[in-house]
Image (cartoon, rainbow, N blue to C red; front, side, top):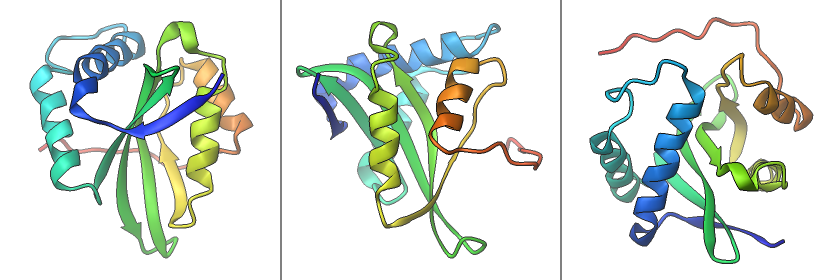
Length: 150
């Protein structure tokens, strides 16, 4: 099985949208329609086109079929003296999970010498994802993740 990782193109929009909604439905028992909307998806897609140094959307293909996606964002860290890549979203269609796609992608991402660190967030209940990330060398940090919605 050959895994291809490609930059998002508009022809993949409908499957990307379907998978993004799939991620939000799976990650939350209390999914509400306003948490993720098509307007937000279009905004993310447009931002990736106008600011590729800030955000990238990758799609994963097997035999030319889109089976997953990742959204990456980037920022400079004084602490790590380099570029931080945030794995904002990673989703693999259910029938393609446990086939090494996420591992392949993260290993490829880890080899990029431009990045100093990869950050990601996982729901505590998502034990399969936690096991995967731990196996790939991620560690749970002892800090509080905080946000202020503006």
